[in-house]
Amino acid sequence: MSGAKPICSVSINEADWVGETGYGGTPSDWQHICDILDLPTSEWDCPHEVVSEDFTKCIFHTPASDLPAHIDESEAQSNVIDSESNTEAPNEFLGADFGVLDIQTESIQPSGDLYFAGARFTGKVTLSGTLDVSIVADRAVFQRELSCRDVEFTAPLEFDNVRFEGWTDFTRSSFQSGSSFTGATFADPVVFED
Image (cartoon, rainbow, N blue to C red):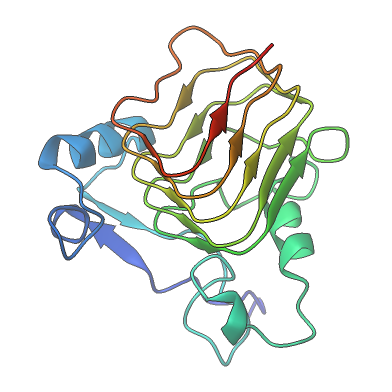
């Protein structure tokens, strides 16, 4: 036996994605995600290892309040997202539950495009530096502050139908053409100043 941990039990399909009981998406939203991720079927399976043998879900699909005290959520997230640490699991976090997320490209370089479609961020999210990867966050929910001050996004962002429920700050950030915020809603102030 290789000693590898089992893979997360979370799967998402069109029925999960569509309608009021799911992520509020549409069939065309779901097909778009399937196309982006080049899914061989219309179901996405989480590629990440479970938290431990006592869990059936990975750190991204386990609420922070349910994680063992010895697990540093931020460190574990960084290890998966960082290209130097991530050798196997892709940066696919559909329907994930994040507490705080901090991607500072001075110390973390994502190993590939970041897929946060349907994710829920319950803590502050901070992005800084130059991000050379696309971020797809269709139908994600940012419940607290999103801070992206002075960020250079060199690849397109796709924040369609995202709910920004807290303060959102893109001060002095630059965006690649093709970035989209179609259908996004902002409950609190949003800043896009130079």
